[in-house]
Length: 194
Image 1 (cartoon, helix red, strand yellow):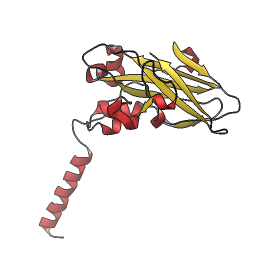
Image 2 (cartoon, rainbow, N blue to C red; image 1 turned 90 degrees about the vertical axis):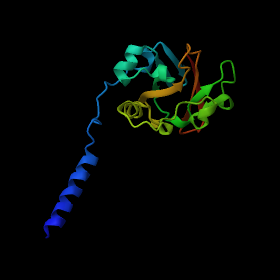
Image 3 (tube, one colour; image 1 turned 135 degrees about the vertical axis):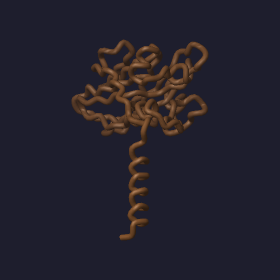
Image 4 (cartoon, rainbow, N blue to C red; image 1 turned 30 degrees about the vertical axis):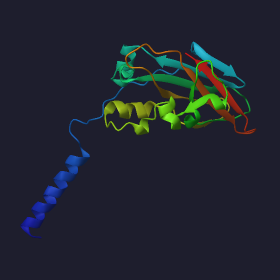
């Protein structure tokens, strides 16, 4: 092999390593938010064989601890959600994309819900639309709640991100969480206000 070809391969190898190991972009570890059984949260609703609880993370110190950012000043409220299936026989489908915000005092059924696909009309923050490539965004994605089928006795938890005014106190939030019984296809809509 010629010396110029060897130097070329060394340069290509070095560039590949530099792109794979990006200095200054080392991943920071942020602690996980503590999870408790759904029944232990102050803001919870029991419906059928389900308990759905939410805990908004309004405190700037908690936001700094768990997200390394003051999210409210960026127009985002992190809301921790825990859904627990207490049924002995029924399973439920939790579809994160169906969760949405209802109008205050408006309908509490499906027609009153604004979902993540309607971000500009008041739905939840869709992290896929945020172009920021940072440890904070990566951490938010890692901690967001995931869709899941909840078999009897199981639970799911994680964060939802709600748009809030960055320059004024937030108003009351009406969160609607639909859960589908996998046996009957009946949809339970759980309404939470905080």
